[in-house]
Length: 290
Image (spheres, rainbow, N blue to C red):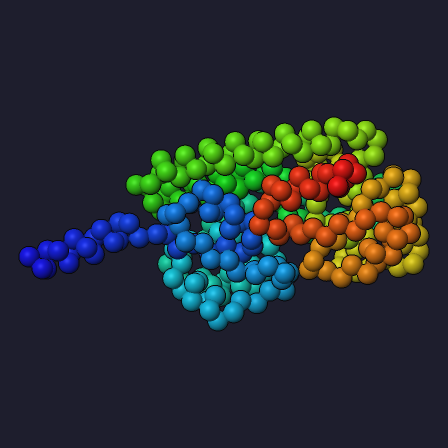
């Protein structure tokens, strides 16, 4: 009898055991928790305040990798170096690319004046190099990401497919609501559709709402004096209402620009957990409603 009870307990604990998932960045954790709910344990690699360009996992995080059933990748730089190491540590772990079916943009890499100086052509206003990984800054992309999460969870845990589908439907409705709010906030601006950023992380957001980001930092470097003068002139002409910086980067140059233009420096990270509130706050700052 004891043996039968033990077998039953082992079987039921297996049936009800959670899926162990690992994600690279905080917004992914929000998305996976929204779809997976109480049935998925989610471990985060790149801890808040760190950059996914340079992050190195702690030994305790490698334990999470060793126990993981799924790794949700999203094509950030950190994964180029570490995903092969994670897979060799845990060959049974499935890697799901959440960027599947997302149309990628190129990162903005050169200011207009610099490109014109080098090429003497207005057709080369922006040089591009490398894809922009910040796909989650546009609500339409978040829909694709969460559907990819749902498909992965449904496949690994078909018994709970209806649970994940219910969570997906709720989350898709919340994405639509976020989109509606942003459109409403930005409806008050007409010609002033350009905003200034230190690091060009908001390309997908800009494209989604017919905006344009003016990047201060180019190719990971702060602007030269000539470029800085050009940026200031451009920002004045466009009546830019705020300059966005990230906690992961120095904001010395941004503060100089903000003082010169008498506009606020808004610290906002694309890696924030509450992606919806983040995008709504950016829209408010662009519209001068903060």
